[in-house]
Image (cartoon, rainbow over all chains, first blue to last red):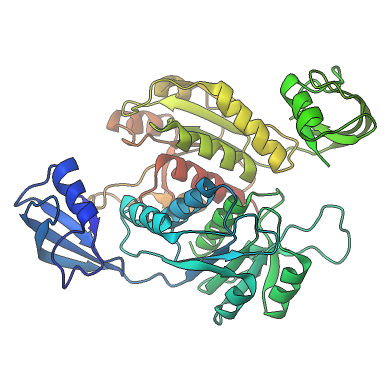
Length: 237
Length: 237
């Protein structure tokens, strides 16, 4: 059954412009056809189309199914990549795999200084529907690294950092899989292509973030973010 | 230090055309500069440039460091996606995360019937260098599903399949994380957008492939492939 997204489904029994067009023009759905509509907050409604209008497709709710939130939550804080495709890929994949919140920040070594959320939000909605989920992750506007740190609650806090292979100083950071404990509320910081600055690493440590690695290989920003998301998902599997 | 790829490094002390241009033109490296060269078979050599020719950059080996292969191996067999970007993204990410072999096959429900390896091999090499690895995964030409099954050795064999949510028949497949045991040689089959056909599922089961899930969500082909790779990597972490 086709899944649609309407955040105000319980008060507005119509699909949005985009989705009305998709339902009526592309999918050729008509009056009497059954659809599924999620509000992105854990509720999925079965509904029947009552007006096949490509601008405003109306429906009547016939049933409701609620999905509880997960017993853990993952928040990834990522420095947008220079190449937007990469961060768009990350958002799509992270939503498919499962994530509660994605925050963006500009670090001292960030090459990208502007990030528009609109397109990323569309990608998140599409990925939620594609993977048949009823929860739409929260996406936060990009802020400075220092301001980002102020927004982190009482979570298990981690900052991904692969020390220089030459650095034989103090013991290397633990793997995220070992550092994190299951059933937690996690926040993980992923640095830009140029990595975190020493000052940022220091600020994060002071703010209670534990330095962790995501494995042996040097990973691109968006890969590291997805890998962190996967590690925490599997830790709770 | 800049890492280059020369499969015949021990007999041919020069970079390939592409890499010679990259080294001399783009990176502006010159005689006397130190570089690292991997043969993609676990060996990394430190070398000094002796001839900064943009068509054939020559070097002298000054040291060698070998990385043993991993105590486990991951082979992903994937049906190429209709949109090539998606399979290219998978190859890049899988190589970054770590994988031994990627095989392609055309299933009964595959929309794509042609796949050129050349571009994918370039992407794999770039990802290996990007992630500072010394092992280049093997990429296999796409074959039919039946022929693919004949190429699988005595590995732990899995086929990813998310049963219809409606199907309350026999017990659901186990999660790959629980079905696989660490330290193994794994082969995982990932179906096309249209999923495996009943006949293919049957053939795989007969060939000793165990049906597994990769989680609750319905994942795109390339996402499922990367998630499977990640699950097995983390199982061995």
